[in-house]
Image (tube, rainbow, N blue to C red; front, top):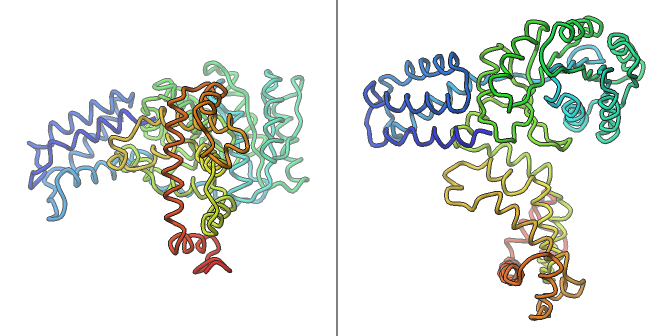
Length: 451
């Protein structure tokens, strides 16, 4: 979402390199570039002005430590101000109230409220170990009720039934009773949306809020809506005492201005980011980490969390044991590793969280993800014997594999060459290094019976 903004801001500090002190003279051009980068990212003009003024005050006359360059000092100032702009630290969902903890989702039609309700339920179930009940009060769209019911089953949440001829307020009240009687920890209420803000929508949202006494009132907004997101946020903020914002479709091609403006304009923090269509594509929003990503510092913490959550430790241990015991690395093993990469969101999702200086010059991630899919297709076209014994793959087999996978013979040749190099590397790791790594899976010095 912040790719263009990040690239522009990374360039703005170049003219400060080699200077011994940050002064009005050598930051004027830099701040002009920062201003243009923010405006091009669709950040609201008043927000840009306040941000630039704050950075200027902090940057003027700032002494440069002996071990730092002015560029680094300026990035540090930008980072601190971006963190403040994005909302500073927020405690998140405390869930300390008497159950059921009621979460009300509001927003325009198409913002992704229903999907977000399911994503939030999944996050609460898996990360917070809570029992969650979902209910839809969108009686004008029966399809939305059915969608939420199916999603509730998918994420392991309870679902309180509602119908198109029901009253939204009564449905919400009965859902609170059902959550209390069913000993649910959290009730998530998905409200109706509109294509635009109107008084009927706001009145209904206020009535439901009054009926359920929601602990969290979250405004769900599409990150790609640009300045329209700010207008609708103001309207919902006036109707409801919002406690936070969920920004959806943050993995798209949006310029990011909504994320940088919505908190400043509404005074409400962003609490979650929707980063994909799948039910696990919801992340708690961390202003400090997001500021780091915008400035090209990456988000290594998120990368580690992603790896920990997606990597199959049992499969990794199985492969390590196989190599330690002297068995050959084969195409079944390679396919397993490629599929693990896909589960983590592909190369793009990983590279996006690395510092810019580490991925400079790396292949375009979209092309890399396409190459991974192509390699899996090639392996799928191999017979069982070919996967176990790649050395038997001669010219005629290569042509058959290429035809079956919809690729070219040179693609098959390239994969076989890469595979041979991986086999050689695995063979060289057979000694103590891999044994110690295998021991780490068990949390002790070395694997039993293999030392």
